[in-house]
Amino acid sequence: MSHRCVKCGLLFEDDSSVIRDGCACGSRAFLYVRVEKTKISRHVESEGDGKYSIDVLGAFERKKEAVTEATVESAEDGCFEINVEQLLKEKKA
Amino acid sequence: MWLKKLWRKFLGLFGKKTLRLGLYGPPNGGKTTLANRICADWLGEEMGSTSRIAHETRKIMLKERVTINGEGGKSIVFSLADTPGIATRIDYEDFVREGIPEKEAKQRAKEAADGVVESIAWLDEADCVVVVLDATKEPFNQVNTMLIENLERREVPMIVVANKIDLKRASVDRIQTAFPQHEVLGISAKHGDNIERFYELLFELATKVH
Image 1 (cartoon, chains in turn green, orange):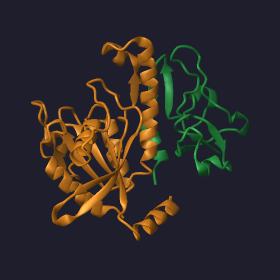
Image 2 (cartoon, chains in turn blue, purple):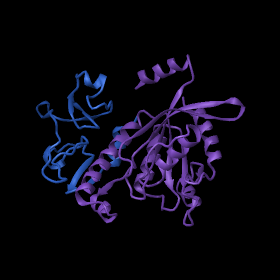
Image 3 (cartoon, one colour):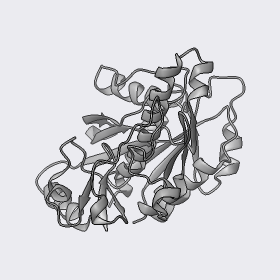
């Protein structure tokens, strides 16, 4: 399991001090996500004007990653489908 | 989370506690207008820019130490967070239709989607919430329902306001009917209608924060 910064999208391992101290972008909010360690890298990949294979928000493209935590999908160029229900569930106390 | 709460309680022993108040709701409900009204009334300055185009606020805007004075010399101190509007779909073409160039519209759509996640992430920080709904619109939708239900489940004290009551199409009753479990207060953040009652409710809200 890993943590993804909700602001810049960077992924961090469970034991990273960044989780405690905050991300370099200034954010202290992280989403708990399931991802292999080898995939921990900056996942903001632009495929052209306004199109992202995995968006900056920490969501995953379901087709590629097949994870259940998918919350934001760039369905088409410049359009975003946001799974608000899933996001709220992740934030459930 | 529990450590943070404990730390705040500890700090509260030595001074006035600063409550974190979040303004939440769908886009274009008037959250920034209400934040501007609160800041103008109590700090003499505005907080952010407003627009008729949705998703004008795409980052959380935070104003620290907003002190609101009440009767009998009482006061409460808030950190006020104006959050980006929560939506389930953001399409750049909606911005293009409002006259924003395509490239800028796509960037705006991405920032708005980013803002939704940031808004929800900040719920962990909020001690209490004001849900700002547009009184001229149908309130019974997925976003409003999920947001209010989630706040109830988390036992976050909240006020539900029906904003824009200065407009002819506004109906506070419609929102009250959709969320009968809450007392809905009709306000006009723009013109200040019912704003005194709103501040009274903020005081009551502060007493509900554990």
